[in-house]
Length: 208
Image: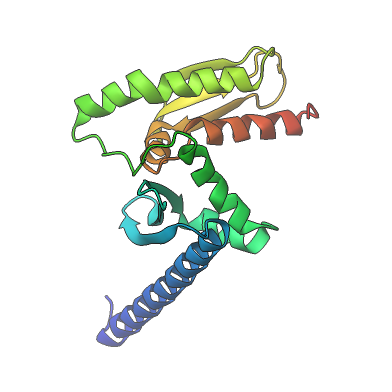
């Protein structure tokens, strides 16, 4: 049985954790805005931070060009922390995602999330899975790459990709479909995490 004193202590610890998380999120957002301003001096830079039940705080940054076009890209908190701590040029890393989507010359805000299972299935079948399969195979040409869907007991439906030529040890990278959907909804390339995972597998087997 929890005493009132124990409950009060737990509540205070929770408040402290939340305050620290809020402070860290505000600092990361500020650094992100300043980093993008340094790379896109002629653009207006804005954005916001929103909580996500599964992924925690998600940071969305937006650029408005002098021509009136709008672009948005989202990032997870852990990758921003890692980038600002370990990347030699975090501003260049952040800006690279915008450069990729600005090349079209048309505004590109975050996609509208699917509203039901049918819309989600259509998005997976019509775009996300075919795009990932094509991008993964092109990245490692002429090597043969296995790409398929599977079901993981803990993570649910996953996209699997691997190298049939590697017959000993781990040769498969699997990403939950919900994570690939999150990447798509943040205007990120859903194939990129799988490709990076496959490169790690090649490195493990001395195939760099």
